[in-house]
Length: 349
Image (cartoon, one colour):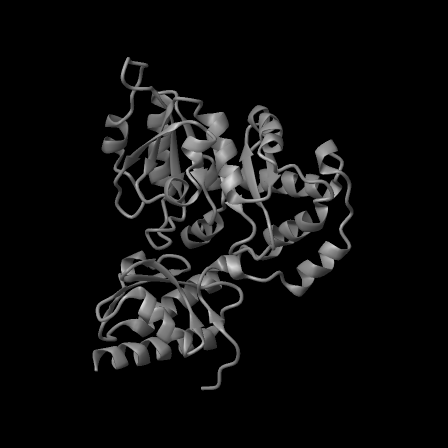
């Protein structure tokens, strides 16, 4: 089979804007978003609120900033927030939960990203004590990055929301890839968002926009978020140029995420039976495939894969993540299967 170029499975963040996105960006009406008069940003925010069933939304440069704003407003300085031990906010967002939100994370184990409800509720501190700050919020992640793109179901999230309401807690969802979760579940994204107070989602991953994320919630919180975004350095001016790509992403790129999921499953099936690697098929629920290596380190494995023009991302010394996205096609998947088989065969010998 003939291949061309690089098959880049490192992340869906490497997606390039589509030709139509580039066209709408070049023609986007713009204003000054700090003054609230960029019509394209305003439309993106309205559309995001409509699709998620929330009152309001704010456009931010990154998912990390969106999550940080939610923590600042939903937790509070010196208060506690419960998080899953492998969540992105705790592990990969520069310590902002403590550095900027000045909150104390309580880290709990889970099953594929879902903290057992009994464990979750028993970990809540309901009142200020001399030694322990009270719990003010719960953070969830859907889909879950470090667990291989696994999905939290609306039923589970409803259970979290019900216990949070019993204890008057804020619930925030790091929904960087929540549209992948919605497509995998076959439900509108609003059926996920209804169980949280705030949610961040990314436009720049599987939805293919070049930049930006959204934070959604009630009107009062999003109004406060405007000033928090400002002091974090995230206020933008003629941001309609990039917001235009976000609008098109929401209008045209959500349903096609199913293609990414199908290709991830195709990749995982192709790897079954190859000696020297292990794939947990139960976790291949969206656009990630996690490989556990037997014969070599992740670094050595990836260097050998590069000789076959295949790129992926290390997650530990023995774990590799492959991520499918709009710039990966069936030929790329076949190339990756052939390359992995060749590299593991060489290592075994």
